[in-house]
Image 1: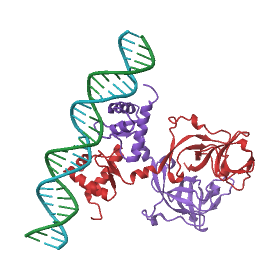
Image 2: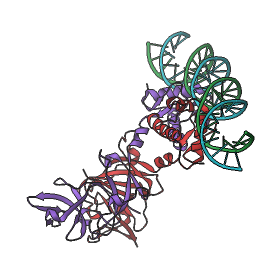
Image 3: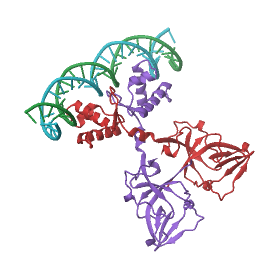
Image 4: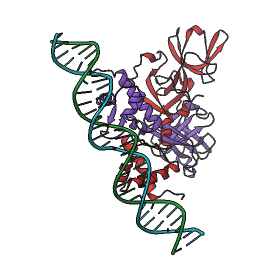
Length: 213
Length: 213
DNA sequence: TATACGAGCGAACAGATGTTCGTGTCAAGG
DNA sequence: CCTTGACACGAACATCTGTTCGCTCGTATA
């Protein structure tokens, strides 16, 4: 089998890709035949089989439009869509996720999965307001991606609501005996010590995003 | 027309999305019918029409599997693939892009376009080594996305190579008379003053990414 | 020259798939 | 009680669409 694709095979591959982009579903053999001025459906079939053996496409027998572009779908799957549900500021609790109508959220951010880890449930994003988190190298306008969770392991960076202080903060979490130490990412800053009943863990920090205008 | 989708309509919509993810092509009416335990194809047809009127899907008449999810295709297009071409550290020049073999770059990050702006050419990403850029709220392990450019407008944050100091740095750029001021993002830090012949602009900062393990 | 093989051709076939239509149920409203 | 409209049923129908098969052509290869 020759190493290079024939001109016709390349044309078919390009056509499928273009068609998929334009229509959201794959072409039929006859559409390929017609638009590429090929005389017979069997020629298309023949070349599709070649493309399949080269592992460039996958064909699903007896299924109309059953052509998949190999590698294309997986590329899409590497992207996670995360709802941007509100903002996070020092003097303001996080929006309650249950109260956020999924249909209302029209703002999303998209990230490749390697940035958020394998577990993709419970992710949400917040826009940072103010400069209360510069000690965590997070500034006004940044976007933080959190994973919803009520507890934390030592050393994890979490968003917590401090009940007495009525404040949201983003710190490393350490449970030490019967007190809790909240450690700023910046080692120069002093930690906060408080009691477990004062902290309400909102979620774990997964990603920080800054978009420079 | 009721505002909310019926349970069945939502199930169908979810099914189409899942199917598309799994197979790369849309389901037939009968596949929807069967997998959702619906008694008749016409019921599916009926509900697909409702979904179409709500502008949630688009149907292509007389075309098998002619269902498109509205907004989905464009959502894919909203993702940019950026090559991760090396690292950036204080005492080390940026990798020369021309020398980077595109085929060698196997690491990519994917971002939604709103994070990188409309112009998507010349983007590349670097992993930050060391703590020389904490004054720009950028730390070891972060990923910075840059747009390749040799000049800069005042106020833009750029990666520059300082010839005399043999150093890479990331600062706000200000051309003031015949000298150049490089201003750290952190207002507490002092700027660097230097001459134009000493600075080699490598690119403009577009996005900063931090992934917390 | 004979054979093999990649590539293409055209037509017929069978199964996959969208469409249509008469009918039925049920709740809301007059 | 009747009407209306949303929703559902099931079956028949008409295409749409993939598959198959016998055939041709040209270029290597033996």
